[in-house]
Picture 1 (cartoon, helix red, strand yellow):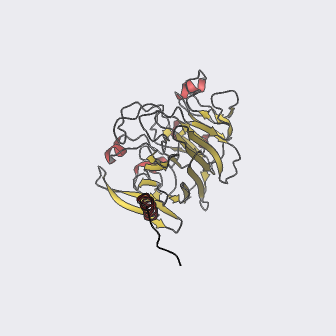
Picture 2 (cartoon, helix red, strand yellow):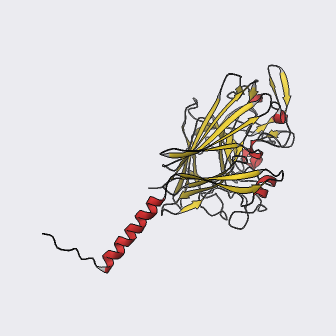
Picture 3 (cartoon, one colour):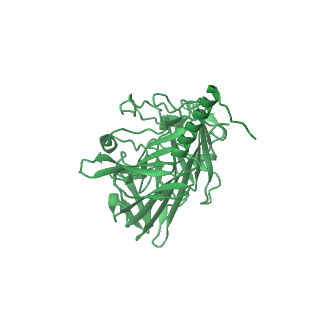
Length: 382
């Protein structure tokens, strides 16, 4: 026969801590919360969808521009902090946003002269970057309200966004029906899948334009982050950041990230391409392009132990190191965003591909489906 168990005060405290920890863990679950984020100058209301998993990761996404407003990721102590740049105000997103967290289309990156030809017919796009076209034009996909559909599964939560870009919108031919789905998994992965169809021959190139700072402290730069890119070549550009139409080897240049290297190590190098971009603002030619998803990059923040791994189906990735942030934009939590306080890893086709026959094609025909997938995986160093 067993006697009654006696608990000491210390044992009671330990049991209480274990109980509270268990209760907290059990209270975390997969969910999507919808809240109002304000109204645009047009009077249209904007909704914020917050995706959560049971690990503690959260992603905030607007139906306006598909914008990722926040992303909470853990450090090596288990502390979750926001690691993407953004604004607290909808007015800032509408009037002064340098594509923080936005979905970009119809064509991500630049098109020379804002012109391209299909079957002998020339199309003139909006010129919103000097003489060139960038990121879909004056009112690209980052500035429209998408139809939003939250979806909950047993092991993940998704937000499906749909939008149809009308024929000749911003100068592009064809009615382009797009569906972009954000999915947060229990493995701290954010999946972004893109689908599009058209009723007229057109060009399409979509991407996600989040600015990351894995320190979780937006007053710090990203120069201490260590970056790996799976690429032996990059795309050189002219002074307007338009490609010459050829690739260049990264070996022996500041563009070699084939092993983890601090972003800041060569960012002030005298290389001509560094001077043109005022840092890194170039497309890398990713290895093993065959339309299947594969790992193409990883970033480590040594101080917090946060790691971001990038997987994609795309042939290229634009690294942008926040070279034009100048301390005038308000930061979340106070202060401003200084130069190089964020970096972008924009998985996409190369700039000006419609005018560069040697680059992978961006043409979409009626009856075809544009498909692209990118996955952002967050973990910590072991």
